[in-house]
Length: 167
Image (tube, rainbow, N blue to C red; front, side, top):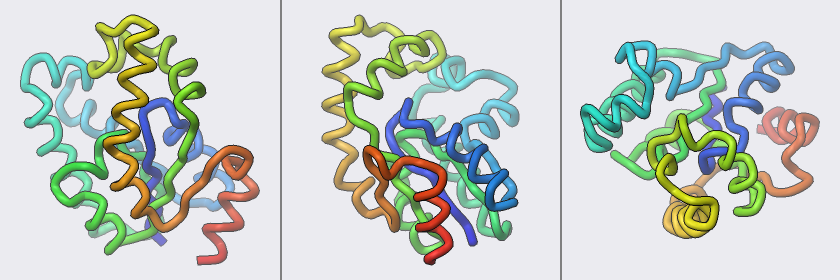
């Protein structure tokens, strides 16, 4: 089974990917980490030097390289499902799991990580709240196409494993 974790930045995709990998004995990957390794620079540096359009193109290309793999977990970037028909591709090739945290939870987590995230780096905490709210509203329609949608108390290892095993 191919499992794609989607959701806003700060939702915990990378965290849950690692935990699920141990629990399910699946190989785990982080799409942003792969992009950084292949580019030899951080996402923030890629955005600064090459621009978001280049980054999104590389993201889509690397995502599709997972077509040849079987039985894995992939933590995607927050915007990954929203570009180049990536959501349709992931749904056609595996199971998508939307980790749907509240705006409040996302903002609290992201306040500590702004330096490493190019889309929010220059924002004040108040502007961050507005940005996350608007970005989530923009992406909700795409995220809602996921195979599995987890919110609130459903975002726990036992529940995720149960839903994955039911598929």
